[in-house]
Image (cartoon, rainbow, N blue to C red):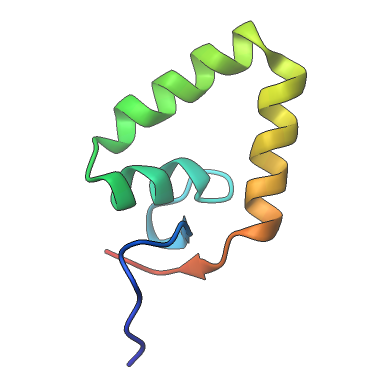
Length: 68
């Protein structure tokens, strides 16, 4: 069994809709997953190029974890 540091960023693949970036942020910060996804959608509508680039970059760089 792996032990992960709670200080690092990750993609939570257990609760993902696309790549798990929003779920990983919500899990690490102990926030509501739905609220993080709504904020991400609002930011995507406001700044589509920047948010899409940041999301794809995070999905490629952050390690995957399965945290239920």
